Amino acid sequence: MHLVGVVVFVGNIITAAFWKVRADLSKKPAIIHSTVKNVMLADYVFTIPGLVIIIVSGIVMAVQAKIPLSELNWLTLSLILFAVTGVIWLAVLIPLQRCMIRHIAPCIESGNISKEYHQASRYWAIFGMAATLLPIIILLLMITKSF
Image 1 (cartoon, one colour):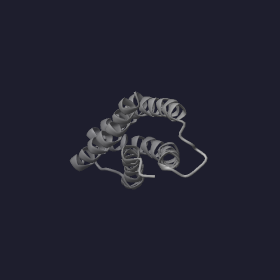
Image 2 (cartoon, helix red, strand yellow; image 1 turned 45 degrees about the horizontal axis):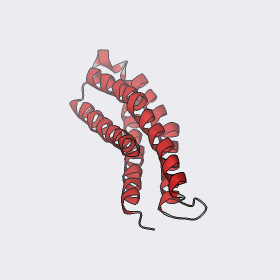
Image 3 (cartoon, one colour; image 1 turned 45 degrees about the vertical axis):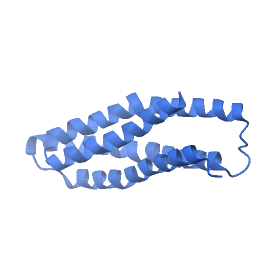
Image 4 (spheres, one colour; image 1 turned 90 degrees about the vertical axis):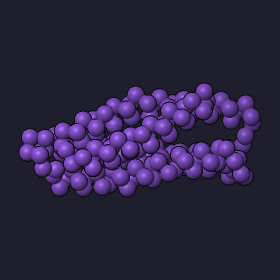
């Protein structure tokens, strides 16, 4: 179950970024609007359930394996990075996605992409990279259990 959660979670964040970048490259507000709305939907349909599966199954496995959480090891570092990822996603990326949807919608009729959309999209890309790289680092820690 844990691996299924990881695949759903990591797969969705990478796929969402891919489609968002492709939509932006089209420079077509209607395509961008649809894509950003669907990225938001995919977060609710895939990212959140993947997150829940990861957390629940991870806790069960850590308890069964009697891995100490009171010392710094691969698991505690992973949990810290996972929490940082969650904060970025909840506090920054979700609000930016709402902002992008709000600012691209009026652009559909005019065909011109607003400065506000571009700014929100740029911040989404920056923080999105961090929120994507951190789970990949966590995945490497999970696989290697290096310390």
